[in-house]
Image (cartoon, rainbow, N blue to C red; front, top):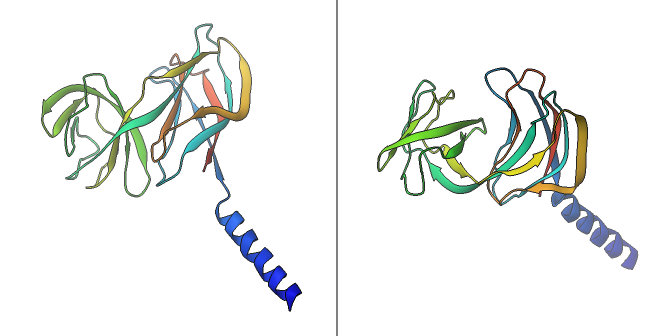
Length: 193
């Protein structure tokens, strides 16, 4: 009987440990002449994003990797069409011109936009179209100031337990500038925990 109880307890602990195991996601993106290479790791409820590896290549001596995380969270009370250059949010408190935003739909689709102006208490002017249809209750995150890593003209890899750590419940964005077709994020891996 003791052996059965020990085995049952061991299996229960193993199930709990497995349920709490982190998950990993790897994203890649190529830059072009109009926009830099960038990836966005979407926010997950009650989870923190920890970047554990980043592989890139660049042909520019001035290339820089930039890491940001969401610091403010808002939502869309009404539908925003993909072609909209206005973003309707629950409040514009905390928004400023040139704020970098990441927008995430309830289905988990993400995009990034930049604020050009504050129109009124619930309407933000954007520097370009949203590019993604946003149903009500889409999340809008103001992104932090960038943590930067000058990388120059290299093909390289950086890995550790924490290349960059985002805020809990917030997305993380990685950008390789400048905008060149030869600048590529070959693979950025994040651990959700």
